[in-house]
Image (cartoon, rainbow over all chains, first blue to last red; front, side, top):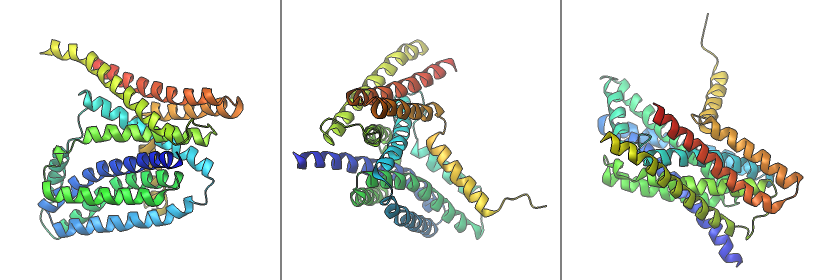
Length: 253
Length: 80
């Protein structure tokens, strides 16, 4: 029984970190591919390397320090942050799936990055621009991954598992990125975002409760129940928004 | 006179802006809802010691907050 409850908690943790990392890395990869194709692969990869080293230093500096923080307070703060973050992701994904908000279009980001680089003009400064753009893209998207890895990993006392899940996502997205290159818009990002939102809100609810001394029935197993509950609620919301929007679309046609 | 602020001020400003965008962004209602959820569940769990109520209230408030925020966005999109 203990094995089962520990596994379910670890499974949700690893899935949440892996999928969140994958989504953010697809966004970063779009910028890097655009910079590499239009400017200089060397500068783009140097920017990626510099950003990864900076993020690694951040994890090394902040990660162990969190181990000295009182676990109840840590879980309360992490729970609150994950609740906000997860609800934001779910809201965006629901609105995008219903066509009320423009989907995160990797093709549009690619074109925007290319046109920004084209307007920089010729000259030696171009490589510096490519480096900075690749660094900025990877660092900003990576920061979100770092926050998820550190908060989830430290709160569950499984920082190692969280780091490994993020690294595996990095390798897989990197390999896929090299294969599909400019076709990153084919990645079902909104579906991934919705799944991650459900996992983050579930973990946020669980940790907020733990931080406020709530005793969850079945301990870690209740995480799976929360995931199932939120998945069902999100599906109902999706159906309701679609039902409300369909007559409008029919009338418009 | 130099108008640019020093790098520690810029760093601090950037740090603050990052967290503001990260937590509040364009959905301040979700930020406020999360604070309200923490307050209500703290009252129920820590003050009233009603564990079962806290277990039920916490996800219900999360669903209600998300539902209201999505409803607000749908209503706004219909108006525009």
